[in-house]
Length: 159
Image 1 (tube, rainbow, N blue to C red):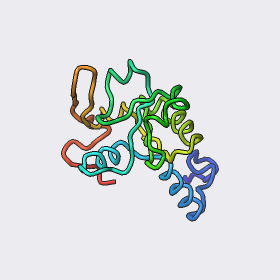
Image 2: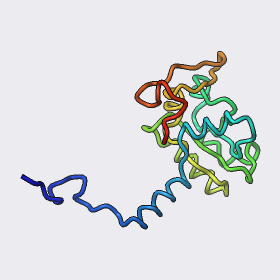
Image 3: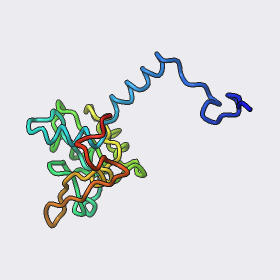
């Protein structure tokens, strides 16, 4: 017995033409960066060419944040961005994780002020889950990588 495309929930709406798909995915990469790429750029030792911005509350920042990140809660962006950020340097925003759109709201606020901006997919949750070091109000910390989010025996996932 064969199933028809109409009965298949994945193909109920046909995939986009390759050129349309390429344009969409290229555009997506202009708006997003993933945790592993941000970490690799920061760990390379040279100026990564961007600044990382944590858009969460002070209590959340104290609980843990990416080393070297700038702390600027979303609500304060309109009044404080110019004092903390160089308009000529791209900004990568993050918030708690994929269930939170705080980084999206922060990216929107920055873009409306004229900043080049990307959102870091996965947020602080995936930074920690992928085993990258972070800072808390008590100092540095790091957890082992979660095998559901990062390879256990390899430097990167190969993607």
